[in-house]
Image 1: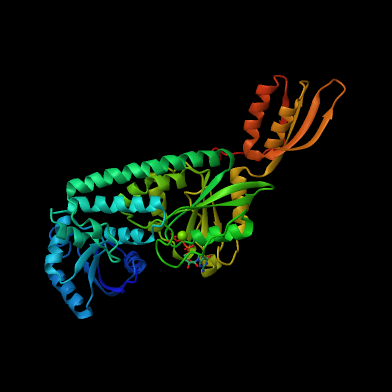
Image 2: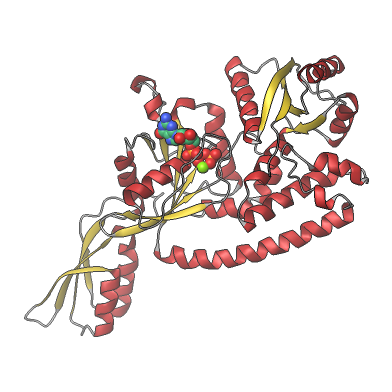
Length: 443
Ligand SMILES: Nc1nc2c(ncn2[C@@H]2O[C@H](COP(=O)(O)OP(=O)(O)OP(=O)(O)O)[C@@H](O)[C@H]2O)c(=O)[nH]1
Ligand SMILES: [Mg+2]
């Protein structure tokens, strides 16, 4: 669908205690979000004010100034960098000669434009309807104003006539469809996880997660390629999984995920809970950070979302990406919340081998030797099971009738294999190579 670029007047309220850097950052991010939605910010209006106005969010004098800015620029939409109450939106739209969107709607709009998978579309529509529900005044007309975002891809349009009851029914219906999709995916995931360790790339939007997955796939991919990430906020919406080689002969699955942003609207976290939880129920999280753009708020955002989806018990490796843009002396300090921090550039490829190695080590993908000896007979079934665990490096029989075997296998399965051997052969003796210490966080 071809759409003309909409003009925007962006409105931010600043509290007296917000620092210059934080405010500049927030302004740039709002402009980035508008661009990501396919619109251009023509003017930025700010007001420093300790508390929000109940009626208009900003003071009434400021509303007049916003009105003038809209007239002067011919803007179509005023975007407020906050979540407005239903009343505030109504009051502002009465005073201003244009539509009013808040930050939540703006982000919903971007998600609606990006969603490609069935699941993503269901999740976005649920979030959009949840947003609308308390904002309906009972008239379809209101819905059409609120339903359309910048790309006018809101749930509105075809559903203008829906009232509250119908919207609730629709949400219920969408949730049921989503639950069915998720149930099926959980089955597939169960199959995959039993055999292959999984790593999720998480982090702030535009940090370079997709670029990192692309590089990883180019370097070590088993099959499939990855399309380049684009320089825009919320480029990736649907999770993408790729198999890559790991350790000597192993494989792992790397998942790309939707990026986070400060104050990610709650209804989106809720709607995307299943997807986010899948990304979080992995063996290892690689937290991708833009090293040229590190702020306390951004670092905390990732950990806050990880906390909300119950993923803080996973081990985390932090990868400071885009190190090519930063002087070595100005690189950020290690992330104290992560098990380890690494530095590099997914674009130039520096630091990637160290990252792969750190991931392999954390996951126990490196190979160790296990020596076992037993006097029991080893039938074909046992031999074939041993071959599944790893590689039989040598097998000898001693004079007393015991068989001795050296098995080379991935460190991560040593304990499982040891338990299996114990159950098969009560007399088995098992000795392992010097195993690198497994700390409590690695499972
Ligand atoms: N200079 C530099 N640019 C990079 C690097 N890695 C990624 N980029 C650029 O940063 C932009 C965003 O990269 P993506 O890989 O799309 O970021 P993302 O984390 O997947 O973003 P979302 O999907 O929006 O969450 C793109 O323009 C990349 O080319 C890097 O190491 N160095
Ligand atoms: Mg991406």
